[in-house]
Each structure stands twice: as structure tokens, then as C-alpha cells.
Length: 196
Image (tube, rainbow, N blue to C red):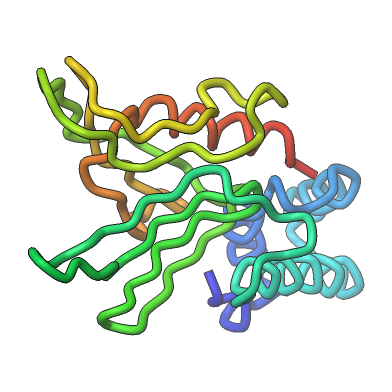
């Protein structure tokens, strides 16, 4: 996503690609102006600069190392390894602004904004017994279906991979999470609620 620097804001094709990814980040009035300019085949410099600023500000917010002032963690999962001394090697987090995959062994952090991602559930399966993989946290009853706290075992549970895409390209995935459809629904609802 940080390829904004490589976009030529005078090139109509580049601007169309930018709009395809960041359409939910760009205010509706500017999106409308941009679509008209794309149709004409010429992007006014001032409009190009406005769009560039909006996209760069959004990316900076998403890449922040700290939680944002109005950011809430809605779902989290820790990947642990070890038998006697179990340590967290990865943390998967969904907030009301972004989705993060933090790898502590490799010192890597993958972050994408909720507004620019599409979520696909793959490799879905039911298992007769197993533990939850991931925990919903907070916001119970405030508009997000399926949100509550749980870490119990269950008789039968659905598991699947959540694949996070930007412009049709896979950025990363969460493997084998329980209730993948509920998590996808959470993200889809977040997108609708926070669209500019």
C-alpha cells in the first residue's frame, strides 16, 4: 500500500488504480470529482494533491505503532509455541481501524486498513471438538454481530482461513480461526460503519 509515491497523479490509469483501492477513504465529493476527471482523461493538479494527502494520511494512521486515540481492539489471537515454556510468536489483531499480524520472532508487522481490505474465507471445515482460535473482545451489543468474549471448547465448530486482500492481491492470512464467517461479518460491518 505504500506505493503511493510511485503513482503518477497525472496519469489517469494510476489515479484509477488508486481510486479502486482507496475509494472508501476518499470523501464522496472528491471521489465524484475524481471520477469526472478520470472520464475526461485529465486530473487537475490541485485535486491530485488533495487525493495524495488523504491517502498518505490514511496510510500513516494505519502504520502507526501505537493504538490510535479512538481505536478499539475487537478480536485478538496469540500464536504460541513451546511445550513447557509457551511463548507468543505471533499476534493477530482486528481493531475498528485496521487488521494486524505481528510476528515477534521475525520482528515483522503487517498492517492494513479495514477500509481498503477485502476478506475471503478459505479452507472452511467443521470439527467435532476443538478450542476457539481467536477471541472477540469488547463492543458487545453496540452494533457488531457476534461480538462477545469466549475462549471455551465446543462440541462442533467451524474453522477456516481469513485471507486479507487489497486490490485483489493477498496481503496476509490468519490460518485456522474459529468462526471465520463471524469475523468476516465483523469486518464487513466495520467497513460499512466507517466508510467516509
